[in-house]
Image 1 (spheres, one colour):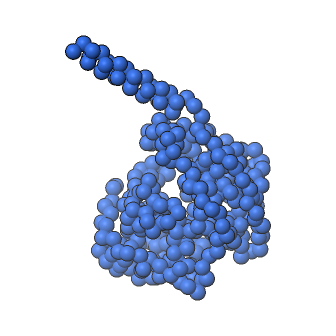
Image 2 (image 1 turned 60 degrees about the horizontal axis):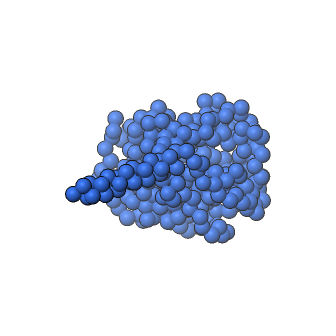
Length: 317
């Protein structure tokens, strides 16, 4: 019997040492780095391209990167009590040291395609735009290079992330890592194909599915339609004061989604935040005031084709 107890004692001791060693490895060693590359890209600076880039910057980038100085200088993205720890979005103004001013165009394009920074660090999936067309990607970078007030050099220098043990473990064990894929030319569908173009806007440009599916954790970056609860809402999002807001159901459910709305009502809500019932959308929802009628119409046409989900999203406050 003593041998049995001794065996289990050694076993428990070995497991304890293994767990302690793993914990030390997760906490004390550096996170992995990846090879940074440069993509061939030519920036367009005509007025139409800069307007397209501005649309993306002012509806997508601004949500995470708008700082207190009114520029894309970064802000607190998640607090220390978040499951992934304290994370700040970066300064993406034209500052040569604290922003992205020293990035080459091709390096910035690779960062936006894969989330991998010039120094090999991974910025996470939120900075990955695999479905954005090459033309729109170039327009986005051109806008970041332009003299728009949002990108004026800022001295803001957000602190580096303080990842939680969970986040570090997921990265170290390979469960949370860049989605490497064969980067090929990406073209947008023709505007005349309203449904296809609307899908491109919802999944490739304005990232509607990311917030309006079930959860960021279960979103499928490479095949958005495979995301759990695709466009059915219910994702927990936090506003600028870190108060919780649940995303809306954008499917054509008559009871819980947009099925009872008209296209004109949808356009008003998207551009101004005004709902048909007289209420106002949460400030978490960007106001897409720059979208033209073709884009609104294409988004609406596409949403009519998305499988209906009868997901009733309750207000959390």
